Amino acid sequence: MKQKQEFDEGFIGNSANIFRLYVTGASPNSSRAITNIKKILDKYLRGKYELDIIDVYQQPQITKDVNIVALPLLVRRMPLPERRLVGDMSDGDRIIRSLGLIKS
Image (cartoon, rainbow, N blue to C red; front, side):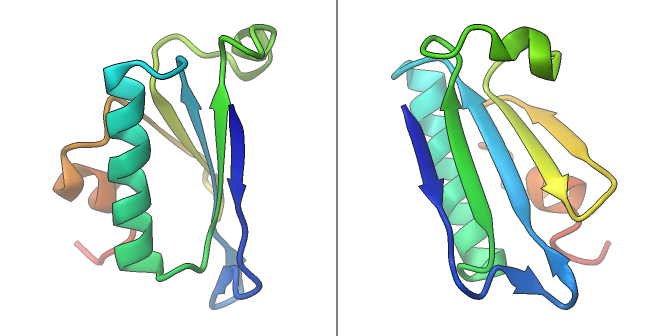
């Protein structure tokens, strides 16, 4: 399961917003993480982002390449610095603060 959501307006200011969500198949935690992060990104970035959803069951070598220790894992690739968040992305306040989507 590799899904990609790309939008022509993939920029906020001069920075691209690029995320990767690593999941384990269709598990309940993975499904919640996908739903939750899409809602958060749509609300705060209004479609100005790229989100890759990568199923590590279908691509097991990726766990070594990306140094994955727990799943689901969200990685904000851009803008730098890279950020990593683990879990089902249900704590919206923590997610938006950690990703810098709102000013603290």
